[in-house]
Image (cartoon, rainbow over all chains, first blue to last red):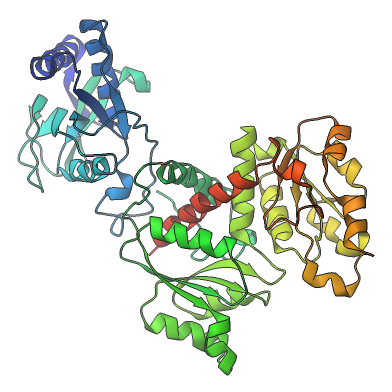
Length: 180
Length: 308
């Protein structure tokens, strides 16, 4: 196990997820005209956790959910060491005229979200796109992208990494700050 | 993160099993892309690819062109009939001219075996072999194996595959043998003795001359085209005789009494090596092969491009 500081775990982790759900319901009601889109590879765990909670709260309404892979729209195809391998995609939801909520675990430079916006365009013209992240690494943005819903804000250096672990992926539900 | 172990795709011989698996994984994603409403991805938008076909082709050339366009690459097409080759220009000069115009990758089909290997040793650009004489046709073998896995949902190592037809002159057969053996399958070749090369058992394949026995043995039958152009050499008495003795028809499939996946690299000679009622049946994955061909070629181009 790499050297790390746990900055969110246990009860507080679950309370944060609950709070994010209620913030979403505040703006999107029963999700009639909205959809959650989890960004591959790690945003899907958060998106699924949120979808489960939302479906519980909003019964019998179900939240439309898609999985978006941004690999082909990344801007570092040439500069990345080794090939960028894509993850699977499942966009069976309607995008046209819907309010889409991108879900990712950590927001750092913002480049993944920029790639996600491009990838989303392939599926239609959304009415609007919002961003939900569990961790916002403040002051690290390289593009003008900001989140609409934030789990927690972290001040970190470029040499550090924030990792979100999920029980669904065989780990524990928590957030680590790793020093490289 | 490792990519392909090769800089060019000259033959299946040079690929490792990990390379093949990587290509399959990437192709699965590209298959999703070509079924989306928006079939393009921008990954190769900074590349120029030349399709240099010194031998006729419709299927392979179209497949490569579509793969390249869907990756947003710029394309130039070159066919030898309408070109300086008829004026006597050498292969190396022709290709170096293309490269001087900043073409990054060359997809080449050539009638001489070893042409792709020769270029890979002598030019700067990335070379992809789309068929070199009677030697190899690597993307065909990759798409064939990928189609088998896609249809049967089984590992290739569990399968028994027979290649039926003119094995002697077939680059598709040779590349398929290399690919399937690398992935651990049992491979049989079946055809008239005049069309099966001597010593082919040294590649680890079983030789069979009775197509009924081959069908009883196999899980998958890859049927090759009888090359009508070669009929003058007298490898067998007549097309009708070939169809009678080796043709894949409904009766032979029924007699085998098991589920066999039928494949064909195309183009089909209906009524010669394969009958219409088999080619269009639910056992046949001939059209899926074509769809998978575009996805496999996208994966190969994408992974080779990333190696710069």
